[in-house]
Length: 78
Image (cartoon, rainbow, N blue to C red; front, side):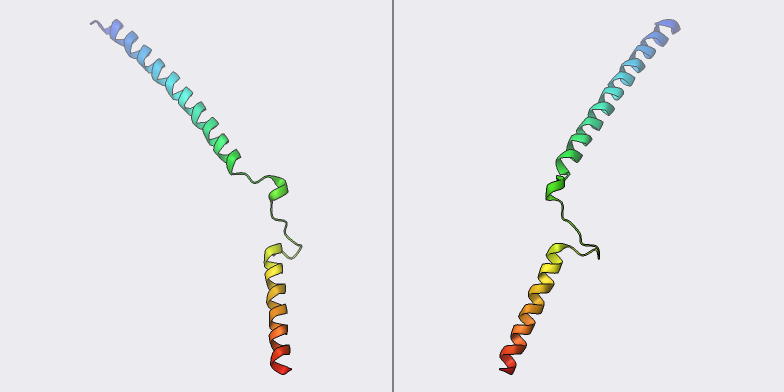
């Protein structure tokens, strides 16, 4: 095989590799976008945070704790 033929074949193979890599990068990006979209929580299901930064569940748990503590104190005293 002469040098020119070798160079042409090498360039052809490099072009194929470049095309394949471009395709794979595009496919990987699309796959990543689909995965990220699947992991996103829709807005209506997002946890809303009060102004002080605590979650509503944490506020509810604190309220339940305080109510239980008050009930315990009242039964202990009465």
